[in-house]
Image (cartoon, rainbow, N blue to C red; front, side, top):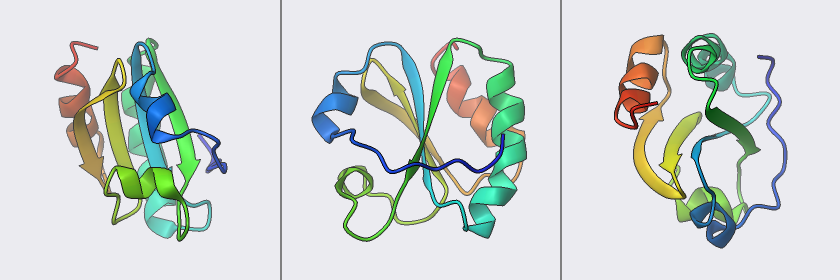
Length: 106
């Protein structure tokens, strides 16, 4: 999973309306912490094909990340039907991501 954080047109209202299980991964393509989190994130999500990953470019002036109180990159927000179930900040291995997904029964 190469870094592919994209600017997003998602709003907090549209993320709150999402159906199913999603992981919002806030970060930036140039962020070394984000690059280090790619492998464990890919490994965890490869075991959960029903989970949709959205890599969202975050930074100054980006309201979606602020609405989720994102302060460090990468931050993974795990959503079920638009509601936050858990979050993982700066994962370096698969365990915390798996633990968050287990809370969903994913």
